Image (cartoon, rainbow, N blue to C red; front, side, top):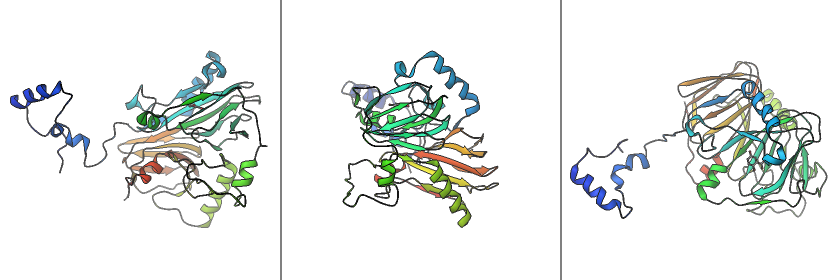
Length: 349
Ligand code: GTQ
């Protein structure tokens, strides 16, 4: 078994040796082995909840301070309290609340970071991805895969707020960040709205279509109306899983794999009064309450959540969810990465 702290008691000869090798940028493994190779995950990140009722006014106030054009993206970042200054909600993922006012455009760009949007508040904005727009409705799950052109705009008459989830810390870890500005603030549309969903998201594929492994999924919006209808039918059709309720994963319908290679996304219905059995997994997960209200016991901490609240469950923390009314939770994590690398684990108790 690995000790959890330093391997040995202080020893003058050893300390002297460490100082001697230090100038060669060498350091002894045995002093840090237990930390480097822990018996189980020991995340620095902590459980946390952002109450939409608390943060909404600040998101709206940001609209009086800076334009979307000047900000490029007007976002308040949700920082894990134990990772302040790192723009991270978990060790690998970023989350933020983006707001766009009527008449504004968040200009076109592309980057190696992958992004998802979950629409929370307001109607009438759109996101454009590689030549196609999608009008944002509450609960819609929209993705901008790595290196796809995207811009956001709001031709409507109310502010629109959504949650951004990106793999920014993961890309930073690999030092593989690239970014380009578009030539125009709003990219030219080359296909009518709904085209990708009709071609790739209707239990059909173009007859000669073959998905290349490196290709992002062609559909980039998962309308909430569809997700909601599916969850209702599933819940009506059979019993809930004791640990997960009725939990589904979003997929690229052409492959069955996660829509994005670095971020997995999930939608979950908990019947009114349902309490999940204790569960933990190695992917730190960001949850958003889309409907209903309830409580989340995360390790030793307990949080009450309501609509549009965001909470984070660190890796290997035991989670128990209790739904007050019927509750719909959206969530995302780096699970596809962990699974691709063969290191994902879960434990059901
Ligand atoms: O919408 O492209 O929250 O590039 C952070 C970086 C959103 C975006 C963020 C981004 C975007």
